[in-house]
Image 1: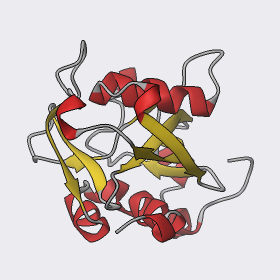
Image 2: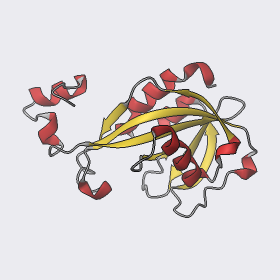
Image 3: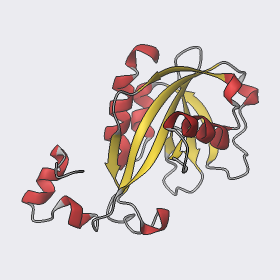
Length: 178
């Protein structure tokens, strides 16, 4: 974070727990997220397969070496939804990277314990295919179910530690969604 402390981390410092120490000095994982909308402006939401809490989220994942964020977004979308690139059209990209920290109970347990959270670049794509072409039973399934939902329902369905990022993503793409 190059010496700058995000506003929400200031409270942690005042409480005697510097943000970097709280996360073990770990970096953020470079990642992308995809808000996929249908013709009605509803958002694709997938129910996480690995979650006990029935959490729903938008497709997202890490950026591979040598990959641009936009390439990673299309790859992740395909890997998680079975949707090929020719069935989506690019609409917009969020103007800035967004990040979130893992909650203490997950810190050191996910991503091999190498990251404190994710730093994400978000993209908006419009789905041009048919619903029956979406196939979440991919080689490495992330979702157990999927549905099209509105923005407020998406915010209510995401795990609390990602909610601020999702709120920012929805605000960034508000003009395109239902």
